[in-house]
Length: 355
Image 1: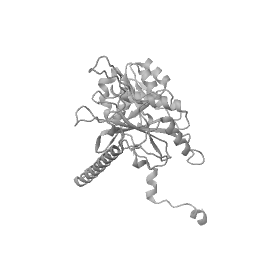
Image 2 (image 1 turned 135 degrees about the vertical axis):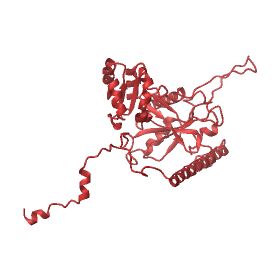
Image 3 (image 1 turned 120 degrees about the vertical axis):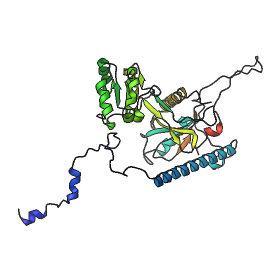
Image 4 (image 1 turned 30 degrees about the horizontal axis):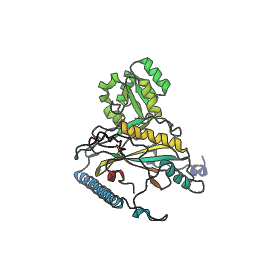
């Protein structure tokens, strides 16, 4: 080899060969990661814990103050309506829009000349009531599942693993769309971590597996099927179909404000017609209300905001068309019976954090 040819070969530093070696460490999210054995590694010091707790406390205090200030401001503006067509919205009672009206406003900003995002997902942010009948007790989290009347075909289907009762059910589950289906062998693979965390989105199981599913808690974590989240049942085929095309709902908490929680969902594409969007929105409301804990007084939904990224506009939605109607009988005079429509429970909370 000539000296000239040798000069064209790049020199590799010895440390560059590290990328060529194999590693037992799995991808991010997999539970089968090697444990740290060196002393002191992976252990949080007391000083680090204090800093973390201090940061969380500061965040909670800030969120609480902002939430209370927003409630006071909204309460002060209640009943204050503008008298002209042009006004500063921050100085008057907040307006709530019909879904079709809000979607049309978002479409104006989504035109090709502006953001060009008519095919983007249209999202709704629910503010949920987490209060209970006891003033000092609050719900920790809301979970539910819904099959929308107008499916979100533009989103990928959920990848479902099914723990079945027998081989026949497993074969039917695979035909229904399960990525893996089986019995004891599949259970062992899940327990050992042989099925990669990124190969599936959720797990459903036959009721016969309920007593032994706790062994998978450390592997599946929030994907563990339970009776509460609706992923355990006697009809595994229906579970697979429901969870592969359905939408899983899970709330997120606001640090320092246990009275509320947020639920962010997709109701369709911005270009969809109002009828399809309305029926999907009603399906979400019905699912939230049906999964509401009996300990929660009043309505489960306090407020809803409609938005479509990357546009920055958010529109508070009028809840009246979606909330349930209850009939209250007046006992003062039996001759005068009238039905009252219960729109909201605690109006201050229904307007929280929508500004």
